[in-house]
Amino acid sequence: MIEQYLLSWLIPFIWILTGSYAVFTVVLLFFWSRIKQPARNLTRDLPTISVIIPVRNEAANILSLLADLAKQTFPASKFEVFVMNDNSTDQTAGLVRDFAGKSECNIQLIDLPDTATTSPKKRAIETAIAVAKGEWIVTTDGDCRVGPDWLHTIATSQAASNAKLISSPVTFYSPETLTDHLQIVEFSSLIGSGASAIEAGFPSMCNGANLAYEKQTFFDVNGYDGVRHIASGDDEFLMHKIAAKFPGSVRFLKDPAAIVTTAPHRKWSDFFRQRKRWASKWKHYQTATPLVLAVYVFLCNLSIILAAAIWLAGAIPASSFLAIAALKNIPEIVFLGSILKFLRQSRSIAFIPLTQLFYPFYVCFFGLAAQKPEYQWKGRKLV
Image (cartoon, rainbow, N blue to C red; front, top):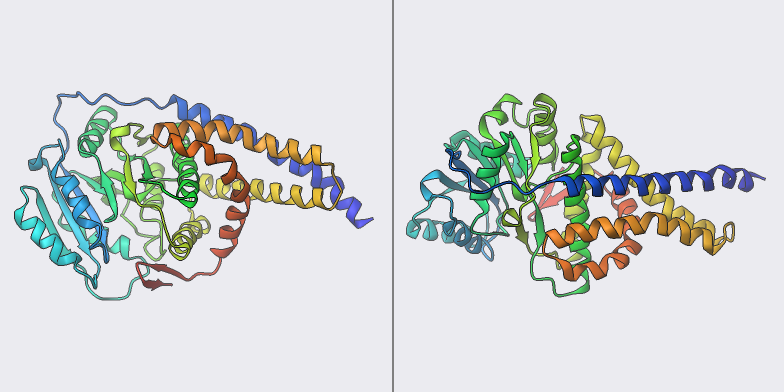
């Protein structure tokens, strides 16, 4: 009797959730397609830029990024680079000093104090902003690569839109293995969803590996006050504060020249720690939109798992389960395919269905795993 009662409302609830998710995905696709590539040929004065790169033990990667920055088409006189060294135990600091001494770019290495902090990246960025001379702050990570027009594209986008914060795309380079392609598909969903939400006027997600904002605006919203104690969120929490104080001032830069690439995770432990930090942010959101979206996406993915369990228990026919799965997955395939094409990751489109098999379990697992407040970043335990 109890089982029949539960199924009498659970099955319709699953259908409603899945149907609403299909509509939600179509809406995301609509707003994604509405984002236009901005013009790059503006002749008006472009802002000066301070690039901030928080690093810890990036000796294997930092020179590639610095070489990319040295090749920027944006005038070297209009940007500076701060490499914020968080007590690296490898050759990171020495490599940066040697490169800076030979480069025409203004590259500065700043060593951070060896003191405990819940959020090393926020500390690194705040320390750099305190001495930055650029009108705009652009952040990226030490293991990233950027194209030659990266800064110019960001600067012209700002000049054309008068935005106060610009979120830009991130993806992985050189996929070789199955897990590389699965990560590309999974990450593209975050990039596309975040871009669509920004275009719709409800900024929710962005990525600090490719984020730009006006320095004065950072001070206008009191920087990281109120969220400094949270391990992650140097990107999204700041965007939420800016969007709340300056409605309509957040933009997504949909331009291939603005894409930042990084290496996919090759170790499960690294992937797990990063995604756990990211998933931990939802309960700290101070605005309703990203919090509601986080809970909604969790429930929609949980509904697919419940539908599979009910089917395996014999309570619904296979045709019903397949219909529920198709209702969720077909709009997703179209949406993710369009994002992957923009990111120049067309080879990964074939891996979308396989990703969809794992994704509901992935979302629910990290949604629960993030409830344990203990995280790691670059070998350091954060609490």
